[in-house]
Image (cartoon, rainbow, N blue to C red; front, side, top):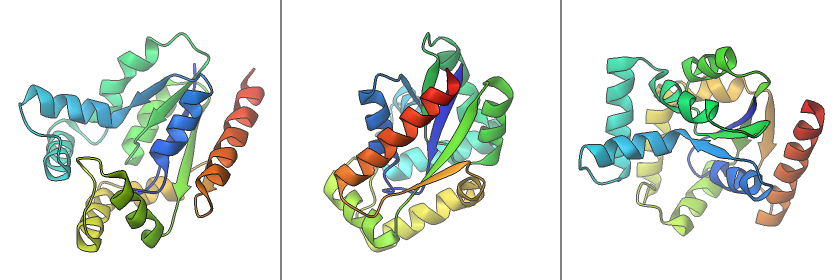
Length: 183
């Protein structure tokens, strides 16, 4: 199995990149779904504070790679040759996937803070930051998990500063080129 993993700061366009790949027929495994499932098991609401607290707590208790390890069974259950992974936050997760998946590639999605904030305000997900200060706190929390190092170590970068359709086309081209190389 080969995997394309998208990473980036909140609001950068990771979810959109994943949706493009999904629209191309690739299966998706979301690390955030594992965190949301843990919140649901605990009977807690899926707010940014709750999800961030659970993600941090589990990383401290079970190791930084906990969410990657929880995704491995779902990844191994996929029948497709290429799978998309959404939500990598630290190098331990990257190493877990590199050790367990052939052809793993890490793609950072980059957008400026102002662009990310505008997108988060428009998106309106329950865990989205609602102010500049909240976005800074969320960025700092995720950077504290090692996200900055992951972004810096990415195999490729897709910039998301143009129109939505321009970004979608960049992602489509990237996925097509990767898929062709892996056949």
